Amino acid sequence: MLQSQLFTKTRKEAPKDEITKNAQLLIRGGFVHKEMAGSYSYLPLGRRVLENIERIVRDEMDRIGGQEIRMATLQPSEPWKQTGAWEKVDVIFKINSRTDKEYTIGQSAEEIITPIVQEYVRSYKDLPVAVYQIGQKYRDELRAKSGIMRGREFTMKDMYSFHETQEDFDRFYALAKEAYLRVYKRMGLVAKVTEASGGSFTEKLSYEFMVLTSAGEDVILYCDSCSYCVNADISKQKEGEACTRCTGGNLARATASEVGNIFDLGIKYPKDFGYTYKNKDGEDAYPIMGCFGIGITRLMGVIAEALSDEHGLVWPETVAPYRVHLLSLTPDDLEASSAANLLYDALLDLGVDVLYDDRKGPSAGEKFKDSDLIGIPLCVVVSKKTLVEGKFEVKVRSSGETKILDRDELLSLF
Image (cartoon, rainbow, N blue to C red):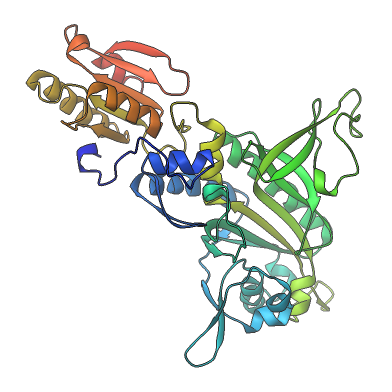
């Protein structure tokens, strides 16, 4: 992509109404555009990041047997009334049509997926099954905050599984837990598996996946020696107390942001919809249901919060909008411009995603600042100074490490 043709531009200053780092950096870098509190448009750079996050999530959900579908966003009110959520859940957007019919735009999908699966999965031979989607969600939050980490419109992966027995659900639950940890690791994040209340979804214990960040909305207690972690709101334990799961560990307190959750829903939704299947004895039985959520846009915000530095965003290679940021510092110089163009073509031939800063207006200093702000993993600089020896400057964004490489050495990195 030629940066001269990218219609978005960087900004020196963040909007005054944004106080969280993720929103400030993403707006300044040209990744998102704020429409109103809790609602953002995703621009070319931001869209590429989201697609990379979605790809990783799809990989891991498919790996454990998930089948992707796309559910309707505009939904009738009847299934929501059937489960009691229409009156009990206060974040539902309610829409009246010109024909006086009531609709909602989905804030979750239990009420939609259960009847869908009910129509097709009628025997124990069809179980287990896991179905997921990646799509938009809408919640009437009283206070949208934390930039793209908590909004009224957001992208989410929600998966629902159906099982014959509690044992089979527990088996899949464990698989999903490990898949979630792989998702976060592939994105450069360390997530803590946190015990929490099921909230409005279930009375059973659930698990949240938390990443430590000062912009987080949750407070957790975690052991400094083992993997035990609990949401402070439901725990009687206190900071500094001994861990109850290991010997020698003590509980530390931290703010964190939730990037995923898994719930054991039991038979609530199948029972609400009268959904039974024929078990091995030919009897009607309710399937056991699970819910597995990952916030896609929230993850983008958390990465921006957790992995940025004082100069700007620092994207992991797996989710970065481009792998290489190629800077031509003297685009008006024929020799330097030709060398940059040839290198750009060579990288594209190798299948490398490149953002090529071929702009003629900005100074070298401005280009370096923009590159640091945008946060692409590898910055390759074409300048008259290094071209004297037929070489290029290569900078790793995350570490600041710089090397001077010739063309063959540079291309061998890919």
